Image (cartoon, rainbow, N blue to C red; front, top):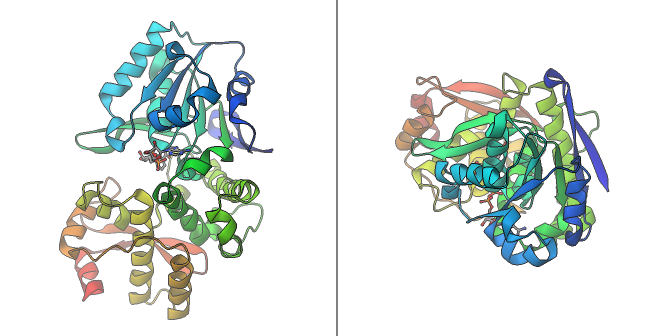
Length: 358
Ligand SMILES: NC(=O)c1ccc[n+]([C@@H]2O[C@H](COP(=O)([O-])OP(=O)(O)OC[C@H]3O[C@@H](n4cnc5c(N)ncnc54)[C@H](O)[C@@H]3O)[C@@H](O)[C@H]2O)c1
């Protein structure tokens, strides 16, 4: 078992991230270890409930089953979760537990952060993306008709319990979307300023076979590296005032792909990988990196066999990127590679972007 501590200095709060591959039937016992005898409501992904419901053993009365899909991360389900919590008569001594991917973690975390001004939240992420990204950092949210994550809060969980056995049932696409975020960490590793030098790109290249087999020990080590990198960043910048922006590497262009295709055609990870490739192209055009690093990046990414994404109309893409929450409306903020495994923030004009595709 691996146990990591996330230490949020501003809040004088520490919480553990546990990574292991124990029997799934022990989940309830593990949840109880973090609660002082209080009750809890489980918000569980429908797929996880179908696959592991018997082993998990939660009763109908204590679980809220959330259907699959990003569109379920909505106000109506948030309201239903709060009603469920009231029906169970949860008090401030009780907790909400999320078991599922990032969608379940985000909406359950938001419900926990607002129910009675905040009750304990335990996150049990079951997708690779949720293990390495959304479960650490304290961002919770729901979507509205205006866009993704429009309503939300920063709210730290009581504990994050990762069991790599859950990952075995992920399909290839859902597994790879998590790998998209993992690859991002490899390219930003030096900025994260973690205490250890993990050489994540090397770890990935040397263990590719075992990663695709979802070998428990390999996946635990991989998740451990990514979580340590994310912890190192969020501990220094809890609310995205500075350093945390590097986590957006590949995301400016990636989010635009997701928007232009209405979140239907590509997974988040596929879009992020395309965003990373675009960032390398842009950095080379601006003479920030040499062609050797770009070739290295292209070859490295190829090993993971992501679906190819065809080019988009750059004018439309720029318009979308200019409306991003993080843009000032005139230029577009990109995180670009500047050297091996280091990145930096740049403001790029839409006119310049058009020249990249020429
Ligand atoms: N809070 C944050 O910091 C943060 C960071 C990144 C992403 N996110 C959010 O996370 C969400 C994406 O998360 P995601 O990629 O986990 O998507 P998801 O939660 O939609 O899960 C993807 C699919 O995998 C299925 N699934 C989950 N666990 C499974 C398992 N063990 N076996 C088989 N199938 C399983 C789900 O049912 C779903 O169909 C988005 O809403 C995004 O905004 C949040």
